[in-house]
Length: 422
Ligand code: ADP
Ligand code: ASP
Ligand code: MG
Figure 1 (cartoon, rainbow, N blue to C red):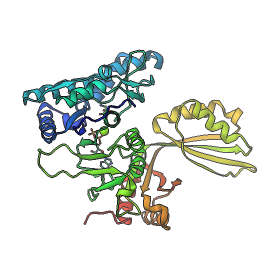
Figure 2 (figure 1 turned 90 degrees about the horizontal axis):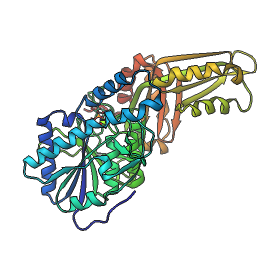
Figure 3 (figure 1 turned 90 degrees about the vertical axis):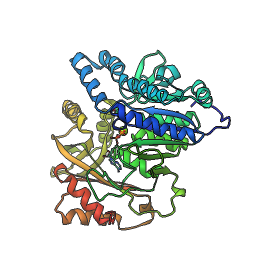
Figure 4 (figure 1 turned 180 degrees about the horizontal axis):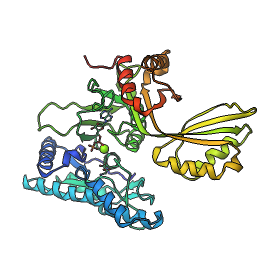
């Protein structure tokens, strides 16, 4: 990514999410937090989200206006509409900063050139040309940058997928060689699990990139998964902290950093859950080489992400049952795809179940400890929760359960791994 050498002033990126900029009063508080950091001698880029609720409103408008249109006639203009939410916030914050006597200006994605792929609705940043913004920052001006936005080679506006402002912030931090990327949000850090679900959840002082990546991709929406990937790849230290404080108040947050920087490694650091899951089962599937390649090849071609694959013997002689999960919103498409290819693939029956959740325990300490899975299975069985699928990696164990038990399972596991606050 294009980057600029430091002159002498350290640079900091501060990102504020939707709730944190939800009204003008909150935007003023953001301006005070920015002013305080600037006062400490740092060059500041601020990345902002749309005001809370705004992106949903814009998505809804686009869907109404474009009802029935195929993706090739819809997706690019959808991005034009939804990217405006962030533009509004940049202007408002620049105004609030100027009102405090602080030089500031907004920079839209196309003005900086936050270059992205052309996958509308879920574009990836490919390069940020930071020279001009960096010069302005080094001259003392606060740069206010919209999250979520990119621009294609053909000068078309793109958006980075829901929650994408986190990724914009990390990408800007990498391009500016910032000393850190501070993600201000409506909780005061990364917790052992979603604090809205489990009041006994505890704030983590530090979490490794790898654990944070698992937490995010397994459902903790506090950071967009892609932002953690990028931070890890570019070695950008990320801090998650509260925007609901005044300058000077204690606000340690959570540092997302290298594993080596964490002295006391927990066996399990956190628990994540996702209700956005559906389970497909192919029953009586012929047991021949190439069958799995055929099934998952078809799903991959249709851009459907598959997770948690289990194959087991079927009651039918010489056949197997294949079960796998897909995001819930893709379930109907996956089902249609499988049904249409029933003859070619060769199975008796396909079933889909949508009311399932994935609950995962995550921790780098698992690498060197045995018995972690057993604690999980014991805790779930004591609550009478049936496990429908299991997936493991070196640092996580995920189970698929009936979604009505999600809360119960997360709470039980939080207690079983000793994570409850005193
Ligand atoms: P923003 O609008 O600032 O981007 P988000 O709503 O995207 O904020 O993310 C913050 C939310 O993430 C919190 O309100 C919290 O409910 C949720 N969350 C889920 N899991 C966790 C976790 N492990 N730690 C902290 N927050 C979590
Ligand atoms: N405003 C966008 C969303 O709501 C991006 C973001 O806030 O991160 O998804
Ligand atoms: Mg977010």
